[in-house]
Image (cartoon, rainbow, N blue to C red; front, side, top):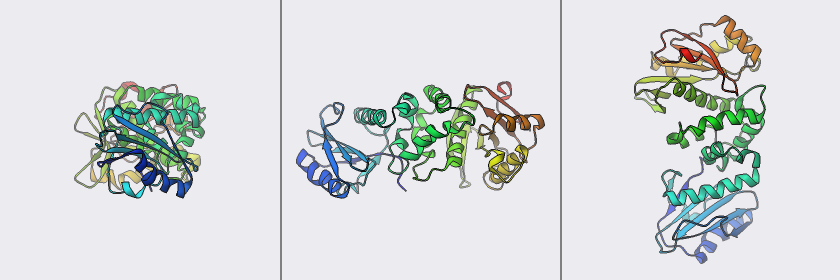
Amino acid sequence: MAGPIRFRRATDRWHLDRVRNALYNPLDGRFGADLASPWFAPPAGHDARRLEMDNGDLALFAWAENGDGAWWLGNTETPKTLWKTEKYSFEEAPDEVAEWAQRELLATLEVEDPWLADYEVLSWFFLPVFFSKDGREVTRRFFAEDAAGFPDAGREEGVTFYDDLLATGLLDDYRYTMATKLGTSEQFDRTRMRATMGEFDAAKLLDDAGHDLAPEVELDSGHALDFRVDGHTLVEVTRPQPPGNRRAGTPAAALRETVDGKTSDQLRAHEGATLLVDCTSFRDDEWSAVMGERPAVGYEPTVVYRYRPDGSLSGYTRGSVPLEVADLL
């Protein structure tokens, strides 16, 4: 399975004839391809081309006119001459190269999925997967068909919620980490993608409560927990499937079944970590049943909550929660 789209850095000298022979000809023979001028001016001191494949794949290539190497970015088969080159994220590449490539990709998204490109911040944030080799179709489909995981909501409502969240810049420093969790697989896994958006919900909750956060914390135990908060508090997030999608027949049972999977693994190794149970996938009637009972979930400290696309939040806590979230619920 391919990962998120990244640059490859070639350190040798390039010119247009070599681009045709080493890049275009192999791709044209493999897929059918066009070698075209870029849609935007390339980085200063560079020449550039778009390689557009008949199967919908795309590659961008910019090479320094003074012979000082080149940058490849593609969601297609990598030509052999670039196999051993180092990979770089948008943030790791030179600013002028990254900015040019992202303008090209965002303009391409505007042609392919104009409704999605209208959400400028979300489109920018998820570019690594919206243009990944394997995951580009399913990640775009998730926002279009599943309202980004909100039940009983239109896609505009769901996508706007996350566009507004990302516009705060809260997760900019963790863009590849968080975007890649949405998926780079060809399989449309709604449950996993909803779980990923649960981590974005958790980030909003923590930030709105005034906490600093860092995602995807690698620990000496060999586990990775979802967040470290204020430099010391460990937080794990789980997002139960709606009761109608599980063997568990009631909302409370769905919560307990989901939490049990966490307590047998990460939370057993890190007692005292706070568990956030994101019930944003629950419909109104299912959530009302949870709030009516406010059940224990088999672990403490725990925060159980649900967001709606308009930003409204409700929930409750269990145990001594070391986070300033109670006033938000």
